[in-house]
Image 1 (tube, one colour):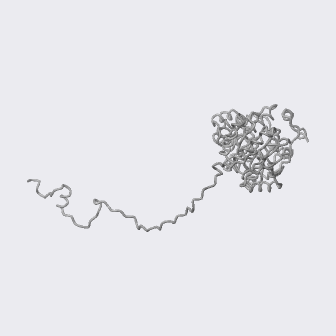
Image 2 (spheres, helix red, strand yellow):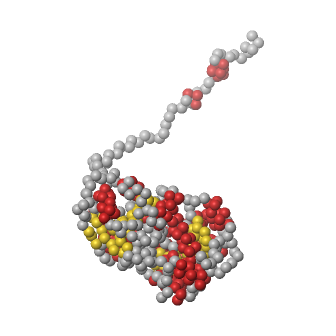
Image 3 (cartoon, one colour):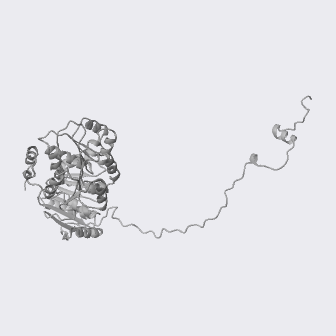
Length: 443
């Protein structure tokens, strides 16, 4: 089947042709007729299967020109990077259409974004928090929304956006179409679907855990961080095909440490992004990697869902993820658009349980390769790998509490009450420091 069979308009077909796209993917083919019917739907598909076009094509096919300055289509995504990428996809698809699209996200000037939204737009793409802020500030009216799209629903809930989503649902009109997409169907996702959609039709295409057939997966057993660095050097020096490598680490600190270890060997070829990096730095690093100026981009799972870059030759799991599904999201960055891809994972002894969980999820073993003889095995450990010194039991016997009785303190002398009669002479003596007798005024 080609895109012409979907009864798309000529402007959309021309835009797809300009991008060299001829045939829809499985999720795009299955979603299109259901979305066109106006029904609510939940698409279950893993990263890299073309979900973005799956919801954009029917939304743009049904779009009609209107003079309302408020957006009629709202697209919510979990990360800033994904906001930018969805906006770019909309602009590509609407190159022959008169549609205004804007992206909003946190970390940028809200006053600038408010001014842009107030100028009028047709499609708003944003993260939940900033979208809610703009709606509450009166930048646009939620009641004008006709179609709501939420991409990466499971990731949204995992990142803690449930309260913002609930608030957005409360502001939206009851009469609307909901198009939701998720890589997994967790209980939290099902609860959200049941609460805010009307008998949403579930469309499943390559759910998370389905091994990607066009990606070759392999692993290396390594003892520690610095041996991993040596192995990475060996692979990059030996494999000329490693031209665009996306490297995932377990934490922001490890990402920065890895960047420090390899940047001097490949000057101006390495980029790093994570949540502690400034927004401009993150966008610039992704753009440099996309354009091929960076050979390696080091990242955390922050961008595992949202990074859409064509031509990624290798995905390298410097550290295995704790959540098995995240492994699928990571390796889905390569082997896109039916191309071949390669995924390599470095596994330490503590990662064996995570490796087993991934294999159980995919229902297939990961290929284990022997560590090359040319790779030096290091004995030096990072501070995170250093064994914790045992200083003996830290238990100390608590002292026996002694009952102190009721609180008590001595009163000041002036506040003491004494049950004794004080004569007038004594009162005068205390007051004037000397005896004062009656009738002495005239003397």
